[in-house]
Image (cartoon, rainbow, N blue to C red; front, side, top):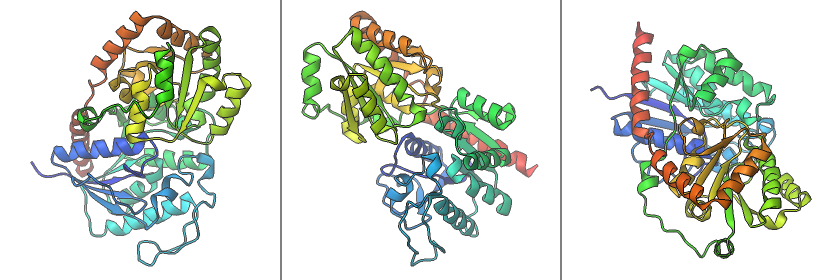
Amino acid sequence: MVEMKILMLGWELPPHNSGGLGVACLNMAKALSKEGADINFIVPYSAEHPGTEFMNIISATELDPIYRYGGGSYESMKIEEKVIPNRKSSTEKVTYEMVSIRDVQKTYCEFVDKYLMDFKPDVVHAHDWLTYEAGVLAKKNYGIPLIAHVHATEFDRAGMQVGNPLIHEVEREGLMLADKILAVSEATKRIVHEKYHIPLSKIDVAYNSLDDKYCDEKYTYDNSIYKYLENLKKSGWTIVSTVGRFTIQKGLKFMMRAAARAISKNPKLLFVFAGDGEERDELIVESAKLGISKNVVFTGFIRGSKLRDIYSISDIFVMSSVSEPFGLTALEAAHHGDVLILTEQSGVSEIIWSALKYNFWDEKKLADEILAVANNPALKKSLRENVMKEYHKISWNEVAKKCLKIYNKTIKHKRN
């Protein structure tokens, strides 16, 4: 079989990621490499990526990763703000000053254009709107088939509200000009079809999965990290957690109000909000106004073993998103034995049946479901055991095989 040469365009890779996008990109690339694909992955910053020997990672700029994800890349209204110190590169990678995320995108496009003068891939795979313009440029200037991968749309990020019209325009052009579109769920496929009027026949669904390494990795819960929570559990408390960026998309204000409802009926509930973001201060104030501050813990941004410790100590994991294209954290929580409560608006709910579900706005139902699990050990045991049998059904190996079929079909159609 002829080796497939793939140019992947992405905005982040672990350990320099701020969410699930980078994790999904890494796992997909790893699975594709196992299938024999030759992958070059361009990122918009310069840094080391341990454990990525299976692909070639290229830096489009000399920026520190902090300016790529800490400077507003995922906050729609900040993409044109000055968030990066004025600087010019001493190399030919950067030809002008970069002070905003839009500047980084322009530099990224310029670099990709130059890179393709020498590197000739069979296909370009662009992850999310931040790299769509570079993907379109590759298609227009070099005739390379373009796969646009939708991990989230601006409608998702804006909590299904208006969002940033500039980002909508970039997404619309990228999706219209792509030869094929991959969506991370049927829900995302519907949004792309309904909001951007893309034919359903042009969109395929490829669900995310847990990395085999995550499941096989030797991990031991450290009970010394969260001793306070351990002591509460020994006293009969139930730990409810949520993990993610604190943005309007995540529906955390609805969850906070549901928490207050539940606590009013069962004061031995503790809610752990793990993460950070633009709504952090509002959530802290909201917990105080609702009179539940003593029942709420904010951990700040955590990753690695400390994040796994949160999953391990939790009894219930809530995904409260207004619109969640997939929701990899739910699978991570299931792996650690948590009962899952998911919004109907999450992609992961399409493949997990042994979970309680609700509409993001239904605070009463969420409170009732939390109370049902907390007050019923048999229900808790049943949901835990069943979800642990389900979460590994989708594998990255199957996703990689599906991608290769799509690549080959797209290339063949392009040639004809």
